[in-house]
Image (tube, rainbow, N blue to C red; front, side):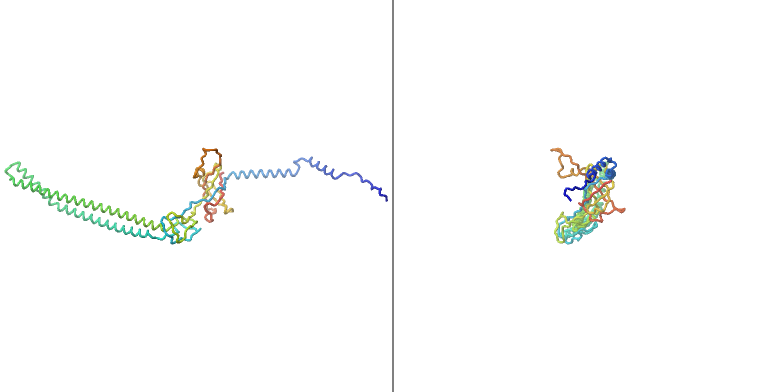
Length: 375
């Protein structure tokens, strides 16, 4: 067979590239609303709009912040007298009731002061009894003086009357009364009057003695009151040797042990009370619809799966920066407006199935996220 022989030519057929181009042209000619992808986009957009609207309508009912912390009035226990601790209760991170013993300081001077003050009270009572006896004695002396003065007083009255009679007779008839009788009556009247005056002075002196004795009674009563005050002070000082819990709560931050020497005012430990709340620092722009008593949902970072309930208790009148040690002076230099934070106090609501924060190790400083329902 000769090499120049050629196979017969195939009939004319359309190429693959031309078919693809024709399909693309047909697809481009289809309206976009007839394409499935268009309706998928429409559905997704509709769901997004509806979901966004529902989310907005729901979220606008709440005001939340993450600038919030658990707060409480921490009670710091410190002694009022100096001394060595002879007993310290092992109550670290444990709950105590009000009045429970926490520590005892070794007694030294207070017991002696109490004994001395008690002895002073007994001595003052004895002085009071002595003063009362002096009053009774002064009254008896005065009564005796008054009784003894009866005779001189009566004699003075009789002598004065006799002198008056003699003088009347002498005026009527000079010869009716002898001069010696008149002189004797006058001398007798003067003598008895002097004796009566002396008796009156003795009575006055006795009255003065009674007054002095009664003043001594009053003074002795004042001394007793002062001594009893010293006893009370000694009892207070002795009572200060025993440190007890002023409130119920959990003992934290204990810094001393048995045998430690403590000084007045030095902190021994602290108590976190059972009553706690949340201090939430909301932006000032979030307070428009916030009111006292509105319900609050509280999420504690330590327990994200537990939803605590609360209520708005109070809103501070003023931003936090107004109470800083060095408040800003906006009247000087350039000013840049910054949204301020306002502390809002939120109390926990327990009961009716709501979780109680006292059943969890929650304390001051722990982060929370409160959400206040404002609408």
